[in-house]
Length: 401
Image (cartoon, rainbow, N blue to C red; front, side):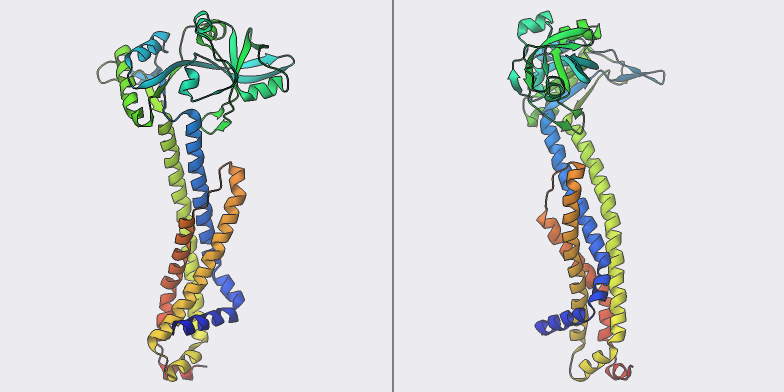
């Protein structure tokens, strides 16, 4: 019986190919939209995880923060090197602590120049940021202590200023100061949280304070937990130490803040999830419209085939067989629309992924769910026309012109 019903349903769909295609358009658009949104959402999530690994998944950043006084917000005093020393001395869950001060400066070599980030820090900077050297070496302890004019450059600075020339041993000018290039950082590329990571010149913190900033401030402190599982505990420990060093009035806000890369990731992924949910809701409306379209066409089909239904009932077809035939037709239409929508959605996601700079990640389980959901839409919206067909009076149906 099932085989006959499937053949009859397929024959009926083939008899009105154009109308069948138009009927499924709503389902096609809805499913395609869902597949595009979900596929790009998965790619964005994977991209965020990649960006976190570039920044260092165990890294925390300590900022001076702000404090409120008389209803107004004031920037808290900057850190000093003593704060960095205290963190290194008193913590037990940190693998590295690095000071960091940063400015955008014009960097010049020969006839070329560009604005790059100039970072004043020390040797632990590469450990905190999980960054390797591609060539050369890091600062020596004596160079850090004396604030010697040496620097390590990123790949973007090397490409833009040195091109094919040798860079190790050459002198780079930073504003009115200059430094000898002693190393090259491994390329990290673009990071959505902080731009081009390779557009950077790293110098000893003492050199930065004396020759570039003109003060002894430390803008931020980078710290790295011993491993991923200790990030929260390390953050609590850092906060406890900093509260002792930068006490606030009882009930007042801390004069610092500690933020982790994971927090930024969670915030970004939450925003992405909200956007994905919003777009999926719009796609669901399209599926609803598609289901209504199927119901409408099936009602028309029942009216057109009333005499045929009467003949089938007269020669012995039972009510449930007629009901099942129309339900199968509706499910086949919606399922076909679902398959076409999945193919179009994958094509659209494949085309958009390079434009949005996210990986193309296929999710088979989501495609199966989309197909099942589209077929379910056909059954749900096809039930009323099928029920009307099944309850026709055979005699009245035979009289229908």
